[in-house]
Length: 117
Image (cartoon, rainbow, N blue to C red; front, side, top):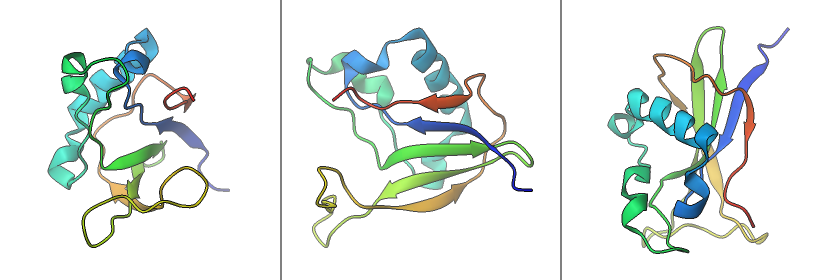
């Protein structure tokens, strides 16, 4: 039987959507995982400097976690030859999954939704 998903977290990029207590808890955990050392950037700590409607830079859209063993994947944005995200035709962008190394799991479980639409 496959290991059930522990958490699927859609990454929020709008400063006004980042400040909920549950998401801040997730971000505190995310900071301890040092995904930037694995090539996956999420500059949420710069959100306070942005005006409403601004967006933080991120190289991935979603983080999915499992427990046994602790592991994760990030849905990384695909880029064109100019380094721009490739539209998927449905208002979003194409991605592919890449495995990441984790040292722990956050207290959040279930689903964390991304930016409000």
